[in-house]
Amino acid sequence: QWTTSSIVDEQVARIRTEIGDGHAICALSGGVDSAVAGALVQRAIGERLTCVLVDHGLLRAGERTQVERDFVAATGVNLVTVDAREQFLAALAGVSDPEEKRKIIGREFIRVFEEAARDLKEQGDAEFLVQGTLYPDVVESGGGTGTSNIKSHHNVGGLPEDLQFTLVEPLRLLFKDEVRRVGLELGLPETIVHRQPFPGPGLGIRIIGDVTGDRLDTLRAADAIAREELSAAGLDHDIWQCPVVLLADVRSVGVQGDGRTYGHPVVLRPVSSEDAMTADWTRLPYDVLERISTRITNEVAEVNRVVLDVTSKPPGTIEWE
Ligand code: XMP
Image (tube, rainbow, N blue to C red; front, side):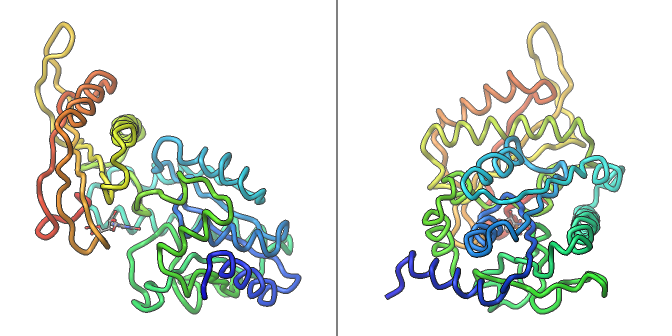
């Protein structure tokens, strides 16, 4: 009989055996898998775990705080935040091709994380690397496009020789719903445990056009409003995710306040899905759509039009890029 607390006990015991009196490092992405993996290892070895949050500047409003304040408060974990926003913006400058963006973000992420890992290793604070690999990832073996985790199952993809770690994968026998239950059992906040999926490359692939600091601020503001209104309407559990996409290379004419504006549209992309392989566009109530649209066009200066994506997957993917 697998109860959640017996899963926790069993994993904690297993991690203690695996790590002995060694030290471990864990990259947090703000997502549920890395958070639960980190919390389990923290429960097992306490102070000897260091979590690293790479702030690439492509996070949504409040996500860094959620990790720095709420996750730390819930677990007492040692956290190092690396502020790499400038580095990512510089690397992404002038790039609008989606796959190019993904490559750059993945590459910079590895670089930043590697540097943090090297520092910790030199201080003797890391021989083990914690990964939030789930059972479906193991089965797919290499599946997933995530850059939020460094995914690679046996040796850590692309890390240089002197940086070899032994992997610890405390979730490798669990499915997503079990991971969430373990997260709750460990006292993690609902906002982390039930967070909707968010791509590793973050807001970088939700700006159609090249990525700039101003565009990120605009999109972050619009996205925060959409999330706030969807939550207030109690719709979080009906929606798989709702990307908000900034059409930065498109301009549209509007009338706002005293005059004519020439701003940008944002797209709402609410989808319902079981596993993201296929998805249906979510029939959101008109009054919720209206509140989102009114607030975004009133509160976000650069945006003068809100449009709704009514395409299923297939043929459309969930993300626009
Ligand atoms: P698509 O757009 O392919 O998305 O229908 C399916 C699911 O995957 C997420 N997604 C990504 N996740 N890195 C990630 O970690 C990526 O590059 C990436 N692209 C898409 C998307 O949010 C959806 O949940």
